[in-house]
Amino acid sequence: MLLRTFLASLLFLFAFPATACGPDSDCQLGERSYRIALPEGNEPIRGAVIYAHGYRGSAAGAMRNKGLIKSLNERGLAYIAAQGVQGTWNLPNRPGRGSNEAGLALEVAYFRALKAKMVEGHGVPADNIMFSGFSAGGMVSWQMACTLGDEFAAYAPFAGTFWAPVPKACDGLPVPLIHSHGTSDKTVPLKGRRIGDTAQGDVYRALKLMAKAGNYGKWRSIGTRGDLTCQQREGKGANILQLCLHDGGHTFRSEWLGQTFDAFVDAGALR
Image 1 (cartoon, rainbow, N blue to C red):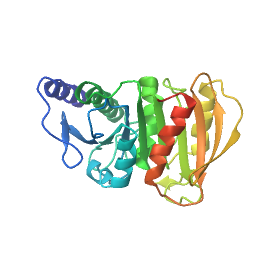
Image 2 (image 1 turned 135 degrees about the vertical axis):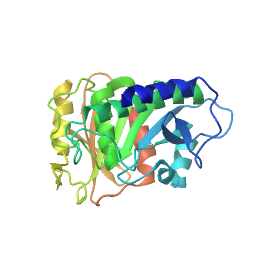
Image 3 (image 1 turned 90 degrees about the vertical axis):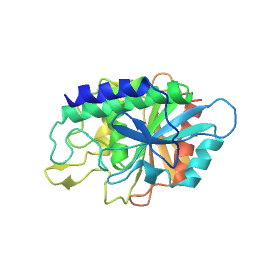
C-alpha cells in the first residue's frame, strides 16, 4: 500500500509543472524531496552527481558545502542532494528492520523517480549520472548498485557499505564502482561493527561480491588521487573496481567527489 501511494504521488507530480526550487529550497518528488544545484550558463548540462547524506543528515545539509558545489558545477555537472526519511534510509538489515523488503522497494522507487526527474525536468543526460554518498549514504550507494545496477553509470560510496550480512549475489552487479574509506574510521570501520541487533558489513566482503560478479583482473596499485591511495581491478569495458584509502577517520573531503568523477571519466564509465 505504501509503495502504491508513493508511486501514485509521483505520477501526480509529473502531471504538473515543477515549482521553483534549488540549493536553498526543497524540490518535491511525491511525498519525498531533493535539492539541486545546477551549473550556471546556457551550456547543456554535462552530467550529474546524486549524493545521499549520512545518518541524521539532510539534503539541506548536503547543500551547505559550497566548495563541493562549485567544483562540480565548474565541471558542467548538476549536484543533486537526495533526502532520506527522517534522517535515515530504508535499507535491508538496518537496526530494528530485518530484511525490510518493503522499505527497500520505496527507496528504489524514489531513486528511479529522482533520475527520471533529473532527465525530464532538468535536462541531465540519462547515461552520465554518478551515484554517491557518505556513511549511511555510502550504504545507500552500495545497495543501489546491487539493486539498480547500470541504471546509473557509476557508483562512488564513501565510508559505508551494506548492513550485514553482505549479500551473496546482486542482480545489478558488476558496475563501475570506486569505494573510498579511512583506515582509522571507528564509526564505520572497514570490517564493520555491531550496532544494536545488527552490524555494519565488511567492506572487503562487498568488494569480493563485486569481483565475483564480474571477470576482473588482479588488484594493482594506481597511485594517489589527492589524499587517497588507490588500487584497482579491471573488468570488461569500463567496469573498474577501485578501493581508495586514506589514513584518517570517518571523514569526507569535498574535492574527493569531483576527483572520483574524473577517475570514472578516465576509465570510460563517465564522460
